[in-house]
Image 1: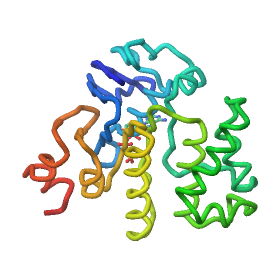
Image 2 (image 1 turned 135 degrees about the vertical axis):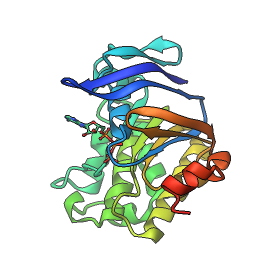
Image 3 (image 1 turned 120 degrees about the horizontal axis):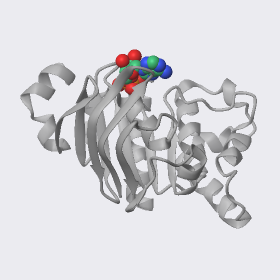
Length: 235
Ligand code: ATP
């Protein structure tokens, strides 16, 4: 579904991604794990067209997308939930969700998707009229994921959804990510520092170090890999 082939992304003269190759098949949950500053967020930003690669190729369903503007990439069905959630604090829950559907004009579809996200996250249903900025961290993460779902993505990119959340909430969020993948067939690319949880959830995983992919395998195999255990699982 998505193929990154030898991409190289720079910030000015600093090379953040060095020949990164990643393949994601339709229907998969794929995770990208790595330490702080490894280049995980840059990988997502490269896919979304915010920091396009200087070299290499990105293809979505067989068509090259690395020269497209971010809004055109969203229109193809690739949607990102950025790190730090970035919901609209002065808008209500419902208004935030409506913003997620701004490229759509199928009113009935939007209404049924609103019902779908309230089914997934009943707590948001209870908080429909509450301002986004007054929600707890976990609720804001739920809102950020729901807002992305309102765009009906085929590929959902999640940047560290567990960041700064309590273990119980992380578990809840990861369960729902699994449900989204299973029930709607949405393909998921999950960037995480929480390697243990991410590898338990994903089908396959990539490990990134200093802008390079150093390992790729089934998630269950990576969980048993000695290097991964030592560097990322604290074992
Ligand atoms: P984290 O888990 O902390 O978000 P990460 O793996 O997502 O880390 P990136 O944020 O992609 O890593 O950063 C990769 C490299 O690019 C780092 O060396 C970082 O300092 C650098 N970098 C990131 N954003 C910029 C920027 N806007 N300008 C210059 N350098 C940047």
